[in-house]
Each structure stands twice: as C-alpha cells, then as structure tokens.
Amino acid sequence: MGKSVGGVLAAVSTPFGEDGAVDEKTLRDHVDYLIANGVHGLVPCGSTGEFAALTSDERKRVAEVVIEQAAGRVAVVPHTGSTRTAEAVALTQHAERHGADAVLVVQPFYEAPTRTEVIEYFATIGSETSLPLVAYNLPSVTGMNLDANFYEDLLECTSSVQYIKDTSGDLDQVYELLFRFEGRIGILVGWDTIVLPAFAAGATGSIWGAPNFMPRECVDLFELTRAGKHDEAQKLWRQVWFVQQFLGAEGYAVSTKAAAELRGRSLGAPRAPYSRLPEDKLKQLRGLLDEAGLLSA
Image (cartoon, rainbow, N blue to C red; front, side, top):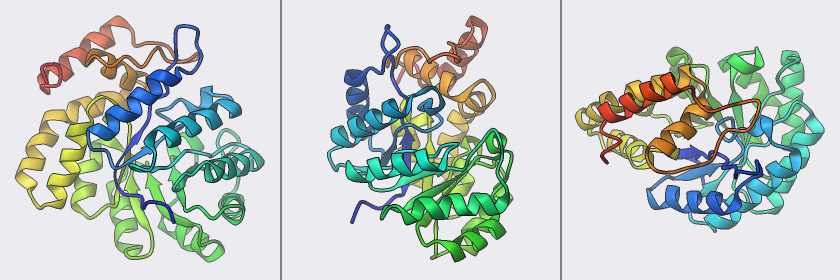
C-alpha cells in the first residue's frame, strides 16, 4: 500500500535545459530541495509542470525520475490526465508500475465531454489500476465544473476516486465538498488565494505550485493551521498572499519558474508556446517577493 496523500504537495515544475530537453539532473536536485524543505508529496507533470507541452514519453520519464529520486521519502502522485482515455490509462498504469502512490487525473479538455462521459472517463481509468485517483477539477480549462452532486454520482460508479483536487476557486464549493464528503474522500485545494481558509476548514491539503520557490513557507502555513496557531498562520498568509495572486493572474507555470529563478533556483525557461515573463511583469514579481521577505530569506 502506498503513502497517503495529504499536506502540501508540490506541483513540480519541469526543468528544461538550454537545448529545450527535460533537464533530469536539475529535476533530481529540485526533488531533493523540495523534500529537504518539508513538502509532504510531489506531483510531477501537472499544470505547473507544463504537461501539455510534454510528449507522452516525456511525461513517463519525468514521473520515473521523480519517483526514483523521492525514493519513498514522500508520496509521489503523477498527473496522468489526458484528452484521450487510452493515454490516461497508459500513463496511469506506467505510474503504477514505477511505484507511484496515487495519480492526479484531470478530465478531458478542449472538446468538452458530457457529464456522463466524464464519469465514464474516471471510472474507466479506475478500473485499470489499483492506485487511488485524485480527480482534478479545473473548470477554467475544461469548461465544466465538477460540483458535489457530480462526485455523488461518480462515487456510485467507482471507488477508485479517493481524493478531489478542487481548483474552482470557489470557497463555498470547497466547504461543501469538505462537509458533504467528510470521512469518505480527501479534499485538496488547488486555488492558491484560498489555501488558508481551506486548511482552516479541514482540507486534506493542497496541490500547489508555490512550493517550487517557497516550500518552507507553504509547509509552515499548513502546519501552523493544523496546530491551531491561527494568528501566526494569518501573519504568514498576509506576507505571501499578493505573490499567490500574481501567480494566478500572470501565467501560473511561467510565473512560478520566474519566482524560483529570482530566489536563486533556476528551473530553465518555459517550453513553447509559453515564454518567460516580460520585463515589466518580472519587475512587479520581484517587488512582491521582496515585500514578502522572500528575496532576503
């Protein structure tokens, strides 16, 4: 049985070298850095990891490297969602063979399937693996919001979905998921600017891109909240909130890499069609990091 999923899971950025290929050495170093700074899990090939710009073989290799480098120290939950059910199944089975603890699965995007088809998609993947599935709700990309009633119907069709990553940004929805599914399914929040209230309400954790450049702060936020130290958690949250807001507004994966580089951790340039932040936005981000005390830390 694999490690449980919870706490702060870093949505791992995928480093690219100057030749544009995945930089495996930097990826291994980054895994060690994240674990050394206390993250509770790693999610390779997610949105922050620019999965849409990776080939299927690259996604497999990145998952292999992260699982191998983590070496059982924390849970590893590769993202295996796809626009094709067959590819999602293949990526999921590959992750299972290589020792993943669970998989994160976004529903098909671009040509949005129907509600029934989305249920069939998750159920089919679940039937082809023994790994727990984290259903990834990302309505800004998929065009469909997976609400509490959707999950009630989904759970009648499969027991494989054991966690939800909700990236709706709707705190009311997060609360409903937490309270309706308490004891049945773990809720992970995926929208940065509502992480603190979600933690305070009892969320299982978060799959979060910000740990790529401020892992200790993200872990401290979760642990302070769990310890009931709400004043300290609120102080820290005030310190970093505007950085979180910037990430969501200015291209998440791109901004995350830029923030990491500003803090001295180069993860390479984003892969086309994505590009580096323009100079005015980089200056703005630098200012926000400085105000948060993250450039002197």
